[in-house]
Image (cartoon, rainbow, N blue to C red; front, side, top):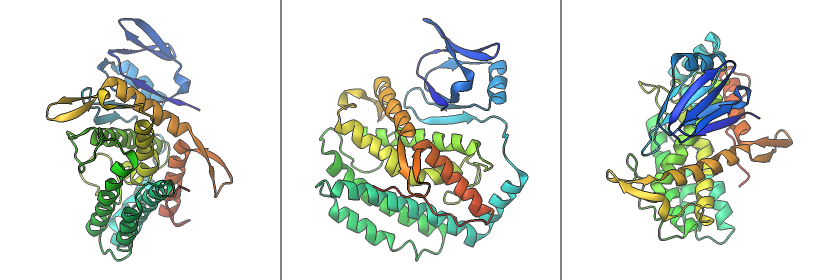
Length: 331
């Protein structure tokens, strides 16, 4: 399986013959090009046109993150090699038709809600006091069917997620990590910093998987397609946030792999230090490789593969071959 390369150091990317290397003051590190899926860059790097042309030839995306906060800043998205005019027209058709768009958007919200419920069920069975929160979310979910437009649907999705976040303190049970409400750019506490960082990693991973399909990432359905470059990856990520990002956070804090010492205050917000970022990235990468038994296929697939399969299901829906049903975890 190809792997993601995560770069935290300062240095320069260069091409040499049919491979690449990353050069720092400590020396050169060669990277076998055929083994690379994507490159995620957190440090200050330099690169040239020759290197970017090689990345295009090898169909490798480069994702850039803010050096200080770890925010996702943008992607070098090589020339689309699988995009088809037919699929772009189908995506646009389903976006422009309010009923067709709403049906897809509702499925995303339904998938998000069901995976949130599965996470809460898991902890409820382990005697975490999340029963009332789970019940409130189930009650909110009954309103999904009665929604009439996208804004109303997003309002319900927001209410479900806000209610769900109240369970974080109950699950984590650590005074150093209190939720205190969602805050972004900059996050106001440590838990929000972890959520934002994890979500950014997931958005990039979904974008990378979209690149390997016939879909265009600029046309989403739950998130409005506007002047934002990519929206489809935000849609698909809603389904996987609870079972990938949130579970990683609970695991990292539960095992004390990340502690209060891994954060610092800066510019009115809370910053995750490089050591903490590396720990999170390592867990994220391991999670993507983790396999589960897929009920429909009867065999094991990785979480990375699950994301790609979700996109294939959406393609079939757009081609009117098979109705899209979002993936729901067993727990």
